[in-house]
Length: 146
Image (tube, rainbow, N blue to C red; front, side, top):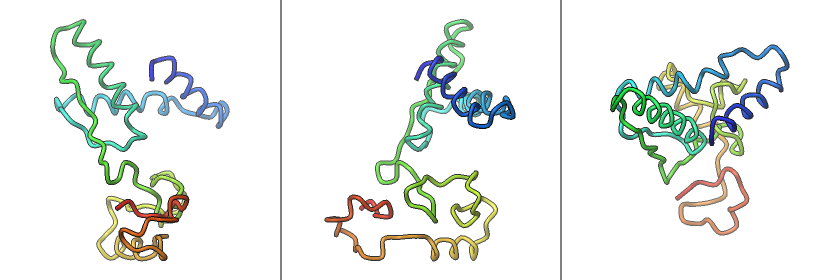
């Protein structure tokens, strides 16, 4: 996605909240890029939905390196084949997100072991299928990837 695409995406998201959207939504990808580039990272574990932010980090690194000499390593995405997206614990059709209003939909970094175990026990899952029995489950969002 090029700069124009990112600007359009920002305008679309900002438009949903009218004039109340902060500039944080616009600058956040640049801050993510700084976090990656600062440590000369070669590979970054990301979900498929975050790949565009890593592409922005690469674009920034290429431009900076062209202007000021080789400074930043160009990071490559590492996307797990087993779990390219981590889904919500409450709604398997949505990705896990810190912005979800339900705390039960995600595992927080500050959750203790008992809280995590409780959230996982209550997670919506595929109660009908067993590992390897994927026939007929293709349309169900809670199907496991085996």
